[in-house]
Image (cartoon, rainbow, N blue to C red; front, side, top):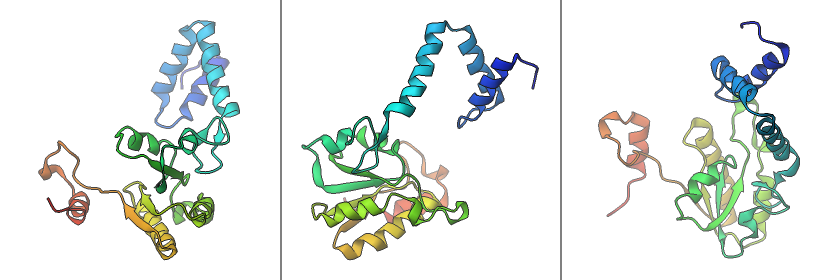
Length: 199
């Protein structure tokens, strides 16, 4: 790494710790901060501190929230009988942008990954079971990612939830809209065929 002044080198190093940011991107960001006015740098630093100081997890669904309950758990117009289980808080955004789902959410904060030492105890499953125990929830939609870990998590949750008398469903997966079948890999095609529906 070229010799930069120590504060600039430290900033570059901190940016490199962010996901998807390599050396060159970290340098670009650091030089942008250096060139920006002091007010801009203060706004950035305050925004970072606010994220750490003012946000916590919703006590019901584990989503990120500014208060005890997140915006979805506070909304009484949402369907309390359906819960969509996702891996991370940012997964909710993809579902919400469709404007097709009006139920509740539950965030696991990860997926099962024995190789990384993540078992059921490390996920937010206990309060999901507590919610189901209250008797309102009738369906659990498992919207974990279409990865090996996401699939393992969905299978584990399905085996855990079905005996409780719940309807347990899995989000559909397969060929994306607008793509060409010749470019789909075998797993994508298998999932598309498995999730076919009658017209």
